[in-house]
Image (cartoon, rainbow, N blue to C red):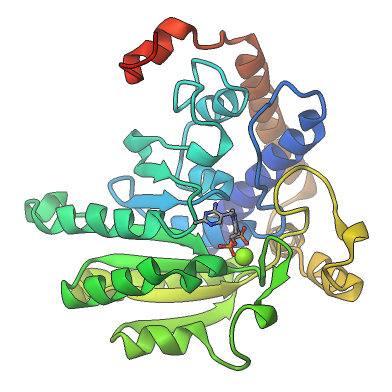
Length: 324
Ligand SMILES: Cc1ncc(C[n+]2csc(CCOP(=O)(O)OP(=O)(O)O)c2C)c(N)n1
Ligand SMILES: [Mg+2]
């Protein structure tokens, strides 16, 4: 892909994710969306940059903070919004909510909010690939927060993936916080996650997650290597969540984060960064047109979701045989 087309595509991806999540945040207080939400505002470049390198056949699996991954991998927008509104037209038939986004046609296998649990399941998905014919094989990307690296299952899976040469890209979005607790209160000082991974025998990288071109370039290089060698790899991207851990609001009145820290990361906005680059290549009117068409698409997904029906107790019976 030509560089200017790539920059435009990355801009579109990040703008769309931001637009969707801003609208979720602004509509949330209407209380029609009744599931918890974990927004990725401020972290979008990781999803956009990594997924830009994936083919439709490639698979991803995500966690509670899955909106950006789902959108970047090509998940259906209407089904996503309908799911968050708890509607039958949602991607989990309205019974999962924001933390259970999936669109298997687009290679989004599932999202699971039990911290750490998508990691071994992702390894299972990758293991299956090894048993397929060569032209049906795929790469699996497992997205998780740095909190998940503190779980035993993460280390067991890394070991298993290394031992079995599973074609996995482990993507750790290090936003420094697990809910209200900073990394420094959870992990020994100066111990790098990347070094632990290397000790398990994997190649491991750590880099800026807010510059989408940087994310794209390093993941392109690593993905090529995984496809060539069928050995798993790990990338830690440093980034930052702007809003509260769970919900649509700013929560810095709680003072668990340093105000200067948040300001610094807002200045380092992934959308503004790519917007600057794209603005140097394309005319403003052209970009305004793109933004308008994305806005219209997002608005119509919300209208679709609101107009859709809720699942009924009959629908529940399909999955819960004990439900009377
Ligand atoms: C096994 C388990 N323990 C605790 C929780 C509650 N919980 C939900 S998200 C979260 C923080 C996870 O932090 P991180 O992995 O860094 O992801 P982030 O929220 O920062 O994206 C916790 C503790 C959970 N869902 N699952
Ligand atoms: Mg975190």
